[in-house]
Structures are given as structure tokens and as C-alpha cells.
Image 1 (cartoon, one colour):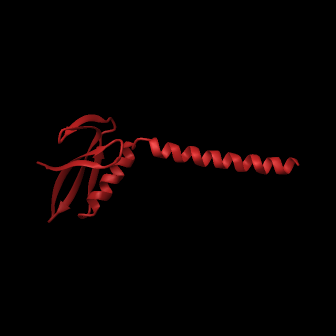
Image 2 (cartoon, one colour):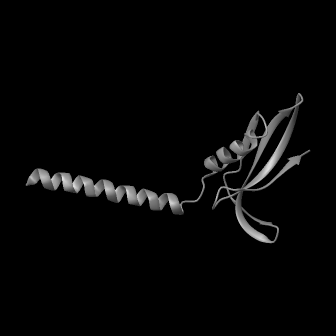
Length: 104
């Protein structure tokens, strides 16, 4: 009987742990590191990246009349032998790139 209870308790613990992780993943905001990774994946579709950065503190941004909490970051790409720099804003809630633009 003791072995049966131990197996049942272990199974119940695994199930509760799995459900708790699913809920945390659903409601957890995007970390700055993950936001930078998502932005780099998006930019890599257009070509290679030579550098990147991100501010760790989110800021409030209004874009097209909508308010967002976003991370600001940048990407450097080498195009035709010249470095071009781009800044981006990425939504803290969804990880979606809100805006991207070339800087001087």
C-alpha cells in the first residue's frame, strides 16, 4: 500500500507542476532577453545581423493611437559592406515587434 501511495503522490505532483508551468507561461510577460531573441529572429529573415542591444527597462509607448509597454532595442546589419542600424520597439505582453526604423 505504501508504494502505491508514493506513486500516486509522485504522479499528482508531476501533474500539478505541469499545470502550474502552463499557467505561468500563459500569463508571464516577455523578458528583455526573450524580446531581443524574437527581434533578432525577425530581422534575420531579411539578412545577417552583426550586432544587437536592448534596454532592460520597459517604457510606455503610443503607436497609432494605441498604448503599449515596450522594450526599446537595436540591430546592426551589414548591407553592401556598410553597417546600417535599426531601432525597434517590442511589446512586453506579446513579444510582437510594434515598430522598426532605420537610424542615422
